[in-house]
Length: 420
Image 1 (cartoon, rainbow, N blue to C red):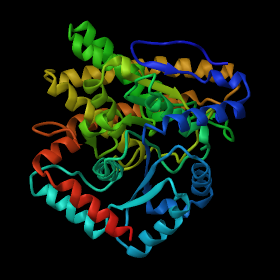
Image 2: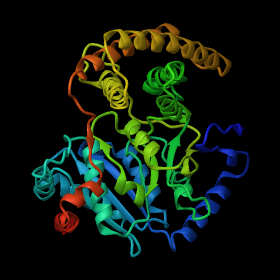
Image 3: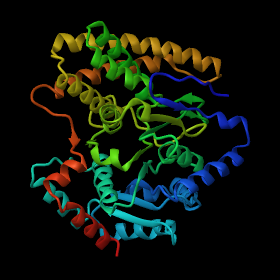
């Protein structure tokens, strides 16, 4: 049975339901969401790279589970990675199974000529639209959802979740859809254990983000920078800051800038930090275990795998500190590297002891070598972010509509035309 621990002003929803009948809990949860959906319009946004259509064993399970959900008003698939119309039409045919009399299904063809024209028009106003990838795809699809004006709550999750079920979706949405709870943002978290390998996963979170923000929280407090201390302390409260699952209100969605690189998740948490009162933020334990596609370490190529992910995340934090009054130089970053690595070794010792207690396989040497790699990635991030560089953020849709008042109408027309 899980604990009851609450930390700071982010409410944590634990998996206490597991001590009872799980099927009964799911029925009750979905009945409540169906009641909420009578007044609260709930949409689901699914980022989909065209290659995921080939992973049918995983995708079929996800689609089959969503098909049985009755509380969703809209499903929007952000389809990216190809400009071939044939593949887009194949995706349309595939996801059409989710359509019902009470639920719409639309695909936003990010690489299609109509959406590309919309992106070009926004770019003409010197508004950053990012580069092709998940962040840009989520952003343009979010614009379409907001343009329709028929969503109060929006949930997002990936399509490579091997262990997907309806509990995940329902628990992700319930805190923001429940009118009695008044949450504006809910982040998903979960255990990540490989049942076949009996090992801990989530290396970027365990070995970089968590020890890094923990170290920076202490450094900032010691240096008397209470605001940055609070900022890093806020990130430290999240049990799985790199999870790709969250739900939020449409009001918040309109205000948030979105990162277009691997810092998407931590940048989103930072946006929430500045735009939402602490009492309106939650995190929820979604599933007993979570399995999805794993990234390679890529120690010899910083443009790929976990090396690129850690570099992008580190660059975001470095940009943030500089933008909030920290004068970074080689000596400060060198201190940061050593402090992070020393802290990571302490966390690795805890992970090792935890693994032994739970009869898991844990390669402590490999974990320490991975932390060394991430330490080097942190220095690479510093070298890449020197000078007048900016965080890779696409401006909020409030910012876009202010500069281009009719952009929503054009975006709706473009997507609806593609879906004919």
